[in-house]
Image (tube, rainbow, N blue to C red):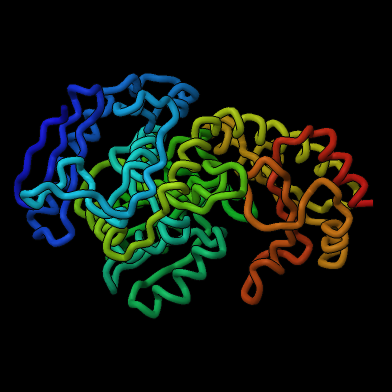
Length: 429
């Protein structure tokens, strides 16, 4: 039976005798002092997860992906993680929560397993899962204060740039958008109140490469944090090893892997007050994923190393084909030696990912014609699924887009690369 301890609105449920890590539950009305104490207790017990299961930091990435966040169910022996759909959990007669959970907006077994799993995969100390990648981004920005300055990559997911410009500038944050592949531009844009640098590499949609180690050094010298949006390169690059303080994923994409679930997550290299503010926003604002969504994403994580390998191999073949096509003016893919960021990408990535974009020679009409003629590639936004997608980025982004009118973005799926090449060849005419 688990041991239970209550103290200052904190309930510790110790499952060590069952071979499972302890659970830390915090009540919603606890004092700030108790919240900090609970956060430290949670960190200690999450770090002990490696000692209470088969997962170890030394495991290879494929093994870690299969087992991190997964435990044999102690009640039934189920190998597959159960789905805990309950929104509320029973209190004991003394008013405590002996099983470690109170209310699903606060925490849920499936969400805790997902956070533990992806945190382990990225080599982090803590994580907070959200209902979407944009929800994760918004919570991170809300953890800053009015007057704080953000440095963001000019070629980044359009939704992130729009969120900063249309909501958080009015809210009181200050921001500059620079090409983070230009280290001199990064240094020049820093201000005394810069608190956060937002890197995205490979970037969306031009696949520019940010030298994460170099930018992290510059940013840390200025006393700021660096977050890396690693959505396009899960398991292919290790931002924490390169100096990042936080990693963001839209788990809708490669972690879900099948275009059937929405989610986002922030992973922190270390626990600190800033991470605790993000946790508070997660609970208090309520942009949390459902238990079933968490279950789907954690299931998808188990195959992500193998899928990323196949996505990358297919994308390289497609990029090499497009680079030689007479109706293609330019191909943006860091795996090509002609790409300006190829050397840096080869240094900080194990493979080059499943995303690429290219520009046709005759502009918007020719690009739209290509999307109309593809048979295997599906005209749809998003990325990271098993099926290949094609989209005209400028029309997706709308007014204010910086994408060229002849630019097409491809999410390369898991079909045979020869079939994908044949489809693009006939569509290009």
